[in-house]
Length: 271
Ligand code: NAI
Ligand code: 15L
Image (cartoon, rainbow, N blue to C red; front, side, top):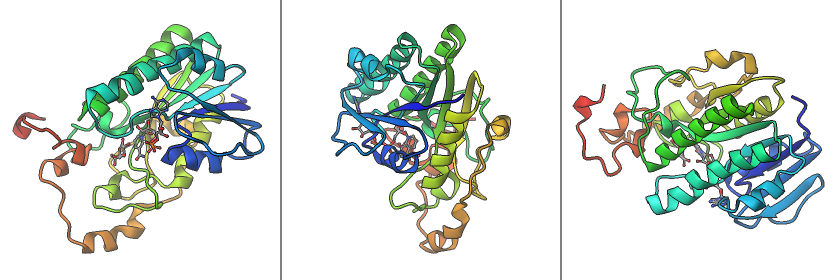
């Protein structure tokens, strides 16, 4: 797809700021949207302030847009009162506004927490069933389902990125992140591949660097051309030397520290 005009929601956030820098000058227009302030518009940028619950504002911001990169919303585990409007209503609004405006493609920031209760000893790919580990994770499963429906029913091209751990500063900082880390330049590359690829219908891609210890398998989406350049192993000796052990429940599952939050189940029954 020859995308020229890109809308990024959640552009004031951590990943949004990195994409704003990394995609500068790559596309003729970056339209940046957030509830939070975005500073001044640079050359090739347009800024919008709105809440994702406001579908009219969303629709307006999608006029003439080729591809939406949807990052906006609650980005950690939170109360249902917070997750519902931003990640359920807001996410639905993004896809529906895109359909109404004839946007061709949506790249959705999903999360590893959509599959967080899969056991960590297993390598998993894009075909595993959802196993959310939190209300936040449920909202990402919802977003992937909305994307699937808009692809099948309305012909949108949709990529769902199950992002691992993206951090400022740009390095992994604890044991689990040796699996889950994605560097800034790999995040930019992955986003570009998802925007630029000429044709896909619906894909799920793990947003992870080329980590020796990664347990997420992107081989079904090799055609995308994503070739991560960074490997968390560079930081492994230093992180492991700290000797900090993961929580006992967290260590068993892909979702790590989200799994023990409010946990009242029986890990022995989670296959
Ligand atoms: P962030 O919290 O830094 O940025 C999210 C942005 O969304 C913020 O600027 C916020 O103002 C905006 N936002 C929140 N609610 C909104 C609303 N109702 N209307 C309009 N804007 C709203 O998050 P980050 O780290 O940049 O993540 C971006 C996306 O990637 C999120 O969807 C997050 O769930 C996902 N993700 C991030 C990971 C990470 O390690 N940073 C890992 C996995 C997924
Ligand atoms: C996420 O989905 C969150 O947005 C981020 O803050 C981290 O918690 C990350 O996952 C992770 O799993 O490390």
